[in-house]
Each structure stands twice: as structure tokens, then as C-alpha cells.
Length: 374
Image (cartoon, helix red, strand yellow):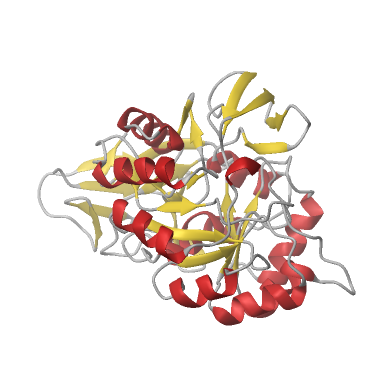
């Protein structure tokens, strides 16, 4: 594998951008300079940021992760890499165990293509959710939390499940959290939980919140609900900044409430991402896409049609999230939540050389994937 030097960029290091060179050897970032032959990228006027990590996305380019095929995973992961998302933790939908097991086995057998984002985990969004807050999930397959079932799925996945979503008010949920929180990250999701119910879940070991504000009670001054409990617990909340799901003021409030070291930008993208308007599906339900709005036929939002790089741009450009905070929320924080920070989510020496070069207007100029310029 050839060596690479990136010159002239403002490099994201720690909590700031510094003008320095980046050096890559054998797919990893190293201290420079490099001796011997070396490819050079002139990145003058660019920001160099860690490749993004999406912990909640369903698909792109006409494919859904729940298709359960290598063709689908390859197509989605190639698209993600082309958009600067270099590590990918796709989300399953609410399906019966047999269907989820097939998806898990396919993921466990998958080998990353050279030009595709690395499959670094699975986010199990359903079926342990509230039947009263299904959102775009299929209510026919909702069930109460079942630790034995999850362990069977985790075995099928070869340990790839990194996040599992739970409505903590449902029967058996707290017991599930206590039993499983040492082995998988528990996320509160699709829930009607009160503050006290959510607080009990966080005390039992939950540490994450799925698409904050969506599919949960609102934050109110006498009933702070999941959002208030999550803030008190120091949980890591996902937030969809596609400009459709959440008002910019609420996004800014979330960053102030939780802090820039906890917030995680996610796309929640579905199969229409990267394609034209039209009719698609999500979790076996029909979805209409117009612009960047994806809805079931009753008007319920059904994921997004926006990739994480565009969500990042919207957060900075249209929602006034500081650039450093947005970079952390798209790379450092999700990598930490998945337990892969150090290898990914950073440009420190020793890290896998996943790098996105952005223009001053935050357009994507170049992607370096595992040390190779795409």
C-alpha cells in the first residue's frame, strides 16, 4: 500500500482545526514526514475531518440493509463512502426473529469492498418498541423485549449488534436492560415513557437515545419525559438534522442541553437516498419521497432521504451549529458510542486513515478510505 501526504489542510485535531500535514502509511495515519515515495494531495483551502460514522441509517440507492443481501450492503456502503461516511452501523426495522436472523447472518458474512464504507456494527431499532409509538415501524411485528431472542440474534450476527433499542415502559424492558447493558449499548426509542420510567432505564444501564425528539413525548416543564431523563443521565442522543425532522431551534437547544461531546448526528436515511423522487418502501411499508421528505401514505415521516454529509452541512449552514461541534457529532462521538474511537473518528496517529476533505463551503472534495484516495 502506497504512502500518502495531505498538504495544506486545516486538520481537525482534538477540539480545533490546525494547519498541519497528514501522513498515511499502510492504511493508517502516522507521524511524518514519510521517507521514500509518497503520493501527495494538495488540500490547500480545505478542512480535513475524520471520516463520518453513521450509527442510524436504513439504506440508499434503492437498497435497504434489511434486504439481507451482500448486493444491498455493498451498494449502500459504496454510496456512504462516496459521501464521506467511512464507517457504517445500519439500523434494522421491526421484523420477526426469522427475518432479523437472516439479516444478521448476512452482515456477519459480509466482507468490506475496497471502495465501500466499513460495516462496523448493526443498530437493532425494532422490534422492542412501544405499539403506541411505532412511527414508520410495522406494528404487526412489535414485541416485548426478549433477552434470549436477542442473544440468538447476536450469535447469528457474530457480535455485530452494537446498539439495541428499547421502549423502557414495556413489560420486561428494565430486566432486559439490566441483563444486556454490559454487552450492547441500550438506546431508548419509540417510547411513551415518563421521566421516571426513562430514568429507571438509564439507571439500569441504558446510555443512548434514538433520534431525539422523534417518536417520544416532548420535553415539557412539568413532564420532562425521556429527553429530560436522558439529559440528567448524560446519555448520547442521536439527532436527525435533515431540515425536516426537527426545527433548527430545537437542534440548537439539544446541543446546549446535552453538550457537543454527547450529541450524535444521524441520517436515518432510507433507500431513496441518492435517487429521485418517487415511491419506495421501508420496513415493508410504502413510502413517498418528495425532495428530502419521506413519508408513509398517512403522512408519518419514514426516515430521511438525506445522507449524513448533507445532514452535517445543514446543521452548520442552516442551524448554526458550530463547525467543531458538528464534526464531533458526525465522527468522534458516534465512534465513541460504538466503542471504535481510536481506530476511527479521529485523525491522530495510529488511526485508520479515513479522511474527508471539505471545501470552505463544506462541499465534499475528496475522500481517503483506509489510506486510499477515492
